Image (tube, rainbow, N blue to C red):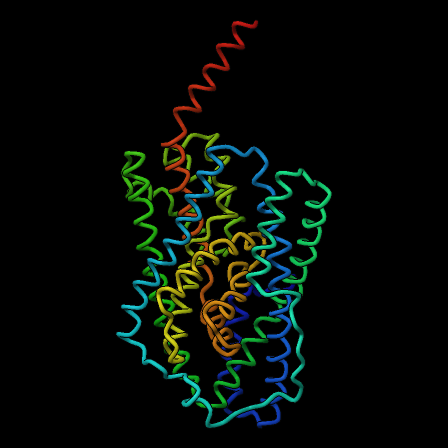
Length: 402
């Protein structure tokens, strides 16, 4: 019999269920042991995140030099703006909707400090640099590689990125359910688990609705620019949405998204260029999920996020999301550092955010890949005719030569 392999989602569900039950019956000694693992893993996570940015964002920026042109820059700009606007859209909606059914400060220190569990070992693992330094350094080195054509340096960062990616896939991701289990177990022992579970369902439902609304807006804009029926395009993209929802990966959905994009009337050569590129740089759905969850957690801890601070976070998070492709939970991993450095999240708040974020991972990638098709439609409207003229001119010149 083949071994049954559980994905990340069922593992997280099992971790939450076990943590909620065992937290009620485990002795304080056992909870402190679990707390020790929680603290050590949090330190490891902080150490790895800057390496993730350096190893994956740097070669991604350097790759922009390949076939660089007006269309490439346009795709990058549209994808970046879509991700940032998705964050601002979800922030605006979440800050107005969540207070209707969440209680401010219900998980603040005053409410959960009645019973404290201290770790037996509190080991510090300082990262080599903070997340902001890693982002700036990645940008400087990536752009430098483009202009100096330092292929050796680029290859070195690509190989370094593979090492970091392997660490994420083989160490961080497999241990995440255990990390979440320890956090839920502690919450259950403190008596606040009911609040967390009830909140999670409300936050996830809010995120799903807002992400679908933003997807409709994207296709309406694409429909206006391309003069096409946005709802017909939305109907054609449903297979890509469902695929993204089920396998939780933007990159793995490329073939399905490509076929759906062709049904929307996008030229084949443009779809072949835009869809793979957007699968690595356009993360609006995951960003919406991250935003809604972060706003909810901050509100519950009595530390609401101001608009000025969030704009700074959104602008940087859209860049760090470039590190996400090829890594399960990549957007989350790439954004963890920004939660602490910009939004001021504590380790407890970050873990809470990760727990809710991972409880239903599929709707973020589903919107990512569906939005890629909307961007392809816009690029086709802007550059399609010019590319047809160039191709026709090239054929005529070839005929004359013959």
